[in-house]
Image (cartoon, rainbow, N blue to C red):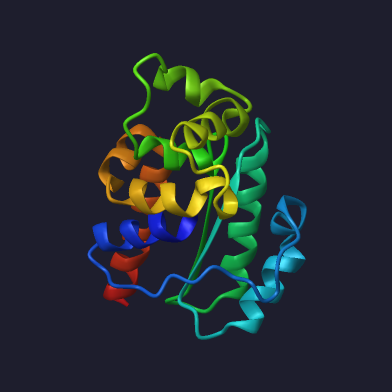
Length: 179
C-alpha cells in the first residue's frame, strides 16, 4: 500500500526517487519495526540509501510518536551527513491514507473514520468489498493504493501526518542540497 503513495509523495516533492519497500530483512510486524536494533540492521545493510522512511500504524497507541522520535534520534547518531531516517505513524492505520484518496460513500464522515480505532475493519474492508476487491491479493490494497495515489494532494490534505512526512522529506532534500 505504501509504495504508490510514497512514489506520489516524492513526485510532489519534485523528485524522482526509487522507492523500495524493505523485504530483506523482512520485519515480522510492528513489534520488529519499532525495535531500534532491527532498524539499525537495515541502515547498516544498505549504506547506499540516502533516506530511510519508517511508516507504521498508530493503532490507537498514544505514545507511538515518542517511540518513533527515539528511533529517528538514534538514526541521527548513526547516519552520516546527507543521509536520514524519517518516521511517521498513520492515524490510525495506513489503510486510512488509502481511503483518503478515494470518493467514499456519502454516509461516511471523514472525521469519524479518522477517530475510529479500527478503521481497517470498519471502513477499509467494507470499501474494498463494495469495490468487489476482497478476493484480490491483499484484499484490494494494491489496487486501491494505486488509485488513491493519483489523488495524493487530497491524501495530504485529509491526513495531517502525511503532510508532516511530506514536509520532513522536503526539509531533508533542502538541507541535503545546501550541504
